[in-house]
Amino acid sequence: MDIEIIEMADRKAKFVLKNSSPAMANALRRTLLSDIPKMAIDTVEFYTGKIEGEDGKEYESITPLFEEIIAHRLGMLPVPTDLDLFVPQSECECGGEGCPNCTIMYSLRKTGPATVLSSDLQPLGGPDSDKLRIVDEFIPIVELTADQGITVYAKAVMGTAKKHVKWQVCNGVGYKYMPVIEIDPKHASDEQVVACAELCPAGLEVKNKKLVVKDPVACGYAKGCLERLDETEGVTVNWDDTNFLFKFETDGSLTAQQALDIAIETISKEAKSFADDIKAL
Image (cartoon, rainbow, N blue to C red; front, top):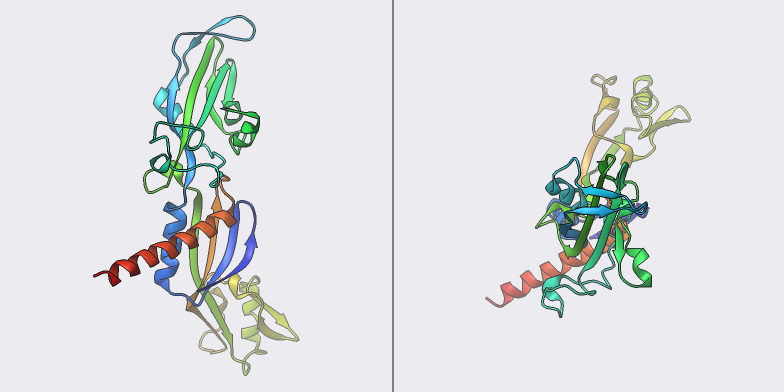
């Protein structure tokens, strides 16, 4: 199994999985979706009672939304994750009680009229706490009207999407068989065959009055390029079930490169563990 990177940005990746199988491609897809660990807000405490604003005015601790809805929205925020710094609570020396090695604490305090944004969630800790601020700053949480306010304390812990989607790092994970576009040189200059380029400008082009493959990756298997051919066997579009084109994005809690590296490492560890179990039988 080999990987050829086509595009690798902070939050999105595009690559070709080579010399593999449909089973391995699906295993990689499922691992990217559900087995990548990240930090996410898991517990939220709401302060009830009067809130004193910076202007000295008292505000009612109430919002237009139920607390459960606000807690759910907070849980879905992308929390930056340093896997060298944090560990799951189940593996922490604190025994799961919560400590700086397994937990991030946040506070939120705001009064209306205003829109509560993800940037209003402040990480609690030392001088390096700014790097733990929510990745996207302008995610709306709730709209506060005059005389309304909110005070919240939230705790983020590590988990995976197998337990809840709030721990899902990757989204839009998909793959397709690598297209195989073949052009019969005997028909490459035929008028009907050349016309295929108009229906698939991304994958085909005309050079020296002949139809040639421009970018097989751009082929979407629609086979619209074959509509003008009738019974002329000048172009065939098939797929290669040993090579796969992958695309995915992340929520920003981890980079795309980190997510891919962890997915490959996870598959390797699970395969080795499975092999060891078989040998032990």
